[in-house]
Image (tube, rainbow, N blue to C red; front, top):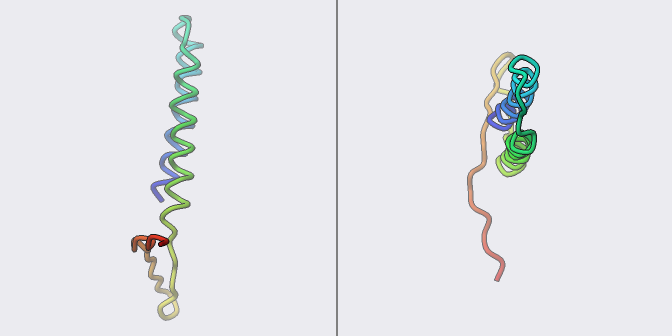
Length: 76
């Protein structure tokens, strides 16, 4: 869920940067905008990959969603 919010943030940042470029008629730092949008997409993907959720069906209309936060044991 939080990964999706990072996706939306990155998209909104890019859209608002484009709108600012059109409305304000001043030069925009597109490199900084790309860094912010790109890092939010990477962070969202990383969070979705690291913290997987598993959904269990309970009864007819109830669902339970769990996130496994147990650490991965070190390989020795």
